[in-house]
Each structure stands twice: as structure tokens, then as C-alpha cells.
Length: 427
Image (cartoon, rainbow, N blue to C red; front, side, top):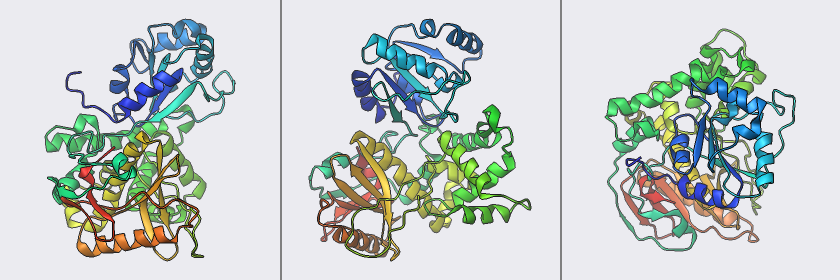
């Protein structure tokens, strides 16, 4: 693994193995979970290996304790193939009473609360801790320079500014290519194909992989993902998505059907919506609490829409929404290192912060995403200042305010708001 590019989750995984009996790494297929987990594992079982899959399943059923033997940490790759092993892992962690016993990776969350033996899944609280792994951020793929540390900004360090190499065309390419490890460092044509292949796999097979998902219609999945992509970075409700789908499908669609499809996309880590931040504010203006719709990687949206980088440059409105998805992806990765969460804020007056990072210790920061241009940056900075001023004084002042751009210059404005190209940021 001499060509392994370090991942932000590496340090998180190392710490979790020192503090919990088992670590579960969830994330989409192809994001690098197995490659990363193997670097920490003492031994491994691969549940997708066709030659040994049936034997492993049989052993796990007949003698789960023997199945879980091996040099620790034991990696069980794609553990959801044998979901009944969860309770046994929990039991083994208790029995051994040692940290760092197991690493589980999964690209699908179990749907049922009971396993095939009709046993309830017990919570892993105190024994098994979850990590979410996403496709690579710009800092991880080494396309961003990482000159601005999110941690340093939260700690009050002042950043003066600088120039950066990524251009608007670079950001268009990186949005369409995505952060898939197999795409990084490849020729443009090969790199862009990875997201297309991933999207096709979701439509053709991933959505209907479970036995209880047989009724999923691939054509409707395609329509849904196109509609979801057209409404990326918005709070579009199910009625909006359904209307968009029906314009291309003469059949009837219920909200229940659409919600079920979206739930499945969430379970296989294709979409990852952003919750609304709801602080105490002095203003009586209503706060909008709907989730914002995002893919776990913006390249899925470009694949669903059939857009290449040059098409994004010609359609800056669509590019703006998908670039916001790119920014949210990276900020989620970086915020995880600070034990933080990424949310959004919008009120009925149109004031918004596309990204609100909240830390467990009460610190928070506001970010607005703009492709560039002085007018849009001014507007974004204005909204951030208004939101910060409107928050109840009982809540701490924000650690910082920033407009994230697809430009190549970073600086601190006279009003204190940072203007930061996405490629300048790191954890």
C-alpha cells in the first residue's frame, strides 16, 4: 500500500480502536473503507469473496464464536451480509473486555430491527462505535493545498490570506469526478467514468439487493435520482420531486413510494441530507426546518444528470448547487475530526448559512457557499453577519464566519468574514 493516500478517518479509527471494543465503518461502496480498515486489521474476513462467502456464512451461523476468532482487530468486511453476527460481536466484546477487538465495514444499513433468527438487534452502545467514511475530500486527494485549518479557525487563529492553484474549471472537474479513490490520479476520461459506473450500479442492482426490495423499479430509480439531482442543495419536498418525476412518467407515484426509495438511498449511503440548525434567535422570523437534499458525493448528481465538467461551466446555476454539495461533503469530513456536525440554516426572510458547523463543546461557525463574484460574496457575508447578530446572546458568538468559494484567492474582509476557496481548507 505504498501509494495509499492518508485519509482523515485514519486518526479517528486509530483512536476509536484504543477506546472501544469494536468500530463500525459505514459508507458508500468504493469510498475506500476496506483499504483503510486493512491497514489496522490483524486478520480479515471478506464477506463479498465469492469463493469463501458461503462457507463463512455457514460458520457464522453454526459457531459464531469460532467465526470471530483471529488476530485482533479482526476485520469483517461488508458485515451486513451476516447481520445476525452483530449480537455475537457485542457478546464477545463484553466477554473479552478489551478494546480494539473488531473492525466492521458496511455499505448498507440493516433495514429490519430483527435478524433472520427473529432476534432483536441489541444496541452497540458502549461496545461498538460508528464512523462514517465518505469519498475523498480535496485535501485527502491532494488537490487542495490545505493552507487553512478548520481546527485553527475554531481556536481563534487569524488567517491573513493567500493564492491557490485551483481554478473554476478545476472545481467543475472535481465536482463531476468526485472523491472516489479509484478516480484520483487517473486520466480525465477514466476518472469521470468512475462516478458514472457507480450511478449505474445503484440504478441496476444496489437498490434491489435485498430480497424485500424486489419491487424496486430501476426506471423509477433513475427518474428519482435525476429529480433529486435537479433539486440538490434545496429543501424540495416530496411533492416537488414527485411532480418532477411524473413529468417523465405517465404512471402514478405516491409520496410513500418516493419516501421509501429515498430511505433506501440513505441506507446505501447514496444521499445524505443536512438537518436544519435551530438556535435561539431574537427575531420572530420563522426558521425553516426542512432538510436540505445532498448526495454523499456531488459526482452522483452529475452522473444522474448526464453532465460533464464543460456543461457545468456553461450552466453556472446548476454548478452552484452541485458545488455546494462538494463543499458540504468536505466540511462533513473535516468536522468529524472535531467531533462536530454539519447542518444548515434558513429563515423565511431568505437569510441563510449553507453550512453550520456545531461542536459538542458549544462552539459553532457559519459558512455560505458561493461560486465567486464580488456581489455574491458581499451578499453571503451580509447574511452571515445578520444571522450571527440575530442569535440569542445566551449562545456563544460564532467562532468564525466564512464564504466558501470556487475562486483562487483567500482573505479576511474588513467586516471579519473570511473568503476561502474550498481547496484551501483542511481539518
